[in-house]
Amino acid sequence: MRHAAPWLAALALSVGLAACSSGRRSAEFTLDGVQPPALNCPVPPSQFGQATPVPDFHEGNGCGVSQGYRVYAISEVGFSQPALITCDLANALNSWIASSVQPTAQAVYGQRIVGLTVAASYACRPRNNVSGSKLSEHGQGDAIDISGFTLADGREVNVLRDYYGSAADQRFLRTVRAQGCGVFHTVLGPGSDPYHRNHIHLDRQRERRGGGAYCH
Ligand SMILES: [Zn+2]
Image (tube, rainbow, N blue to C red; front, top):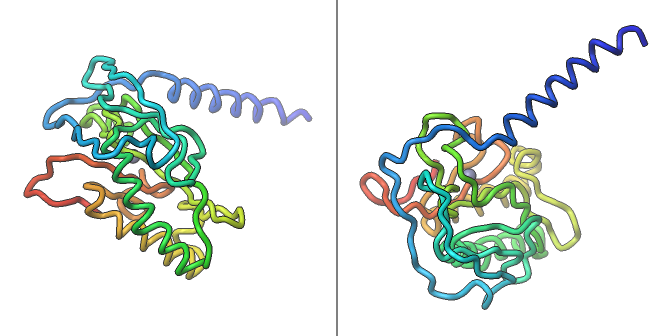
């Protein structure tokens, strides 16, 4: 056991640092070029899922959510944690689940998706948590990160583990990602950059240089 102490000390130090950096409110970001999110609310999310409205709030620094909802489920697809997102994004998720996620799951696995693993929704932080970059779309409730899809049989198709996994999992994950482009204005995931290797980022940022969606 003589050698355990330095190892434990190193572990304690790294855990302490991790806790510090994740708990600290994210430092610096710029608002240059940040557009307000869309305020479309064609259907209140409580009509197609489990959701409760959240009063508009603004935390300063450009962060806040208008027409926000805390969404627990969409069309009987439960969220692993409630997502704080705009009504506009919730409607886009509903369309994508109905038009892409469920048909693809039926085609690939012969069963439906019953859950989404939500890695992040509203968060007041810079893009990719990189200090000095632009305010993330997450800072306006206009973005969601999905790290997994739970099948009716209980298995989770996990983005990090399965994106380069079995042929079926690859087909499912790549299809729903590709079909998200358009419904969402930004789609990022494994291969986009190192920040997105474990989740699919979907947002509804309105303004794109030259219009169109950014799906990389
Ligand atoms: Zn994201």
